[in-house]
Amino acid sequence: MRIRFLTSTPLDIRRGSGTYVGIAVLARALRELGHDVVLETPRLRLPVYTAERLLFNRGLKRSAGFDVTVGFDMDGYRIANQARHVAALKGVIADEVRFERGLTRLTMGIQARCERLHVLRAGRVIVTSHYCAAQVRTLYGATREPAIVPELIDLAEWRAALAAGNASGPAGRFVVLFVGRLYRRKRVDVLLRAAAALRRRIPGLEVRIVGNGPCASPWQRLAGELNLNGTVTFFGDVSRIQLVEQYRAASVFCLPSVQEGFGIVLLEAMAAAKPIVASRAAAIPEVAPHGTLVEPDDPESLAAGIELLYRSPEVCAAQSQAGAARVEQFDAPRVARLFCEAATG
Image (cartoon, rainbow, N blue to C red; front, side, top):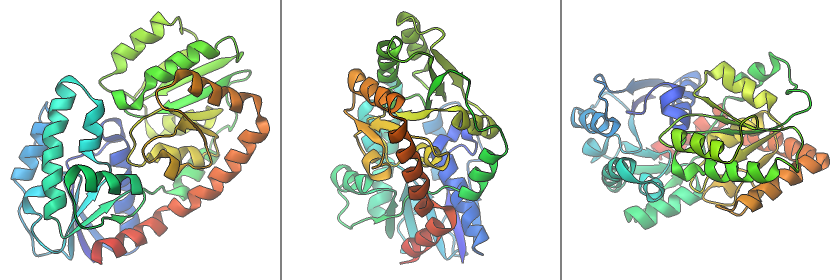
């Protein structure tokens, strides 16, 4: 089968984050199943991402040379009036925008209107979770039920990378790891406040923040105001190899986000056999029901969840084992087959 992928998501992990990872792994898995996948991406880069996306979509043309066209998120909304066009949403932009402010909110609002048109025009719609399906119905007025195909992870690749180094973390440290783009909805500020409460309760506490984004500077200032120097480290964007090292060194993985369409980082944590503490919000309970789930936007609740894992090696071991078993269902070859079935009907 010949498949056309349309995406203006930056094709590198530093800028494209989880969306890039999901698309890249899916394309590779489909090719390994024998399909011909052609990616169409912007040729012209602009300083404003939304302008770049709009220009990319304006230049798209319909093509009869493919069995199916898959447009990710808003991409493809102008040419979606055909039966073999699939709108594949990694998240729901109209849901994400509710948690943002200023220019980010304005530009994402434009993208959300385009994504709504994409959903309403496409022959088929695929989303990554039941949570996303509900948001598509509520926020975009979709009348047809979207197909649900989860995100995927290349377990063979991850396990090989994890096995290549030393599995132990820093001696005498309890390392809490966050990975993600630093948007308001990720609620890293809640993690910082939880860390401030835990410094005296967990000797050797270390919080590692991996990723970059609009909130990097204000959250770094907040860490300073909370006197978290020596406890919290911001690593910014890292390479894939460095990311694996961060998972390897972690004692637990933490995702305090209040909005996740899926959360590929949860799969990465499971593949690394790490216990998880996360908000009971959005798609997180679907993806990681075995984790320690806490009240969103509540620093003390998050602190209590982290402390529970620190004081309960048995709970950590059980979560590690459960996660390592659960992540098998998200392995790339299996999910790629599900995606093909959903895309072709």
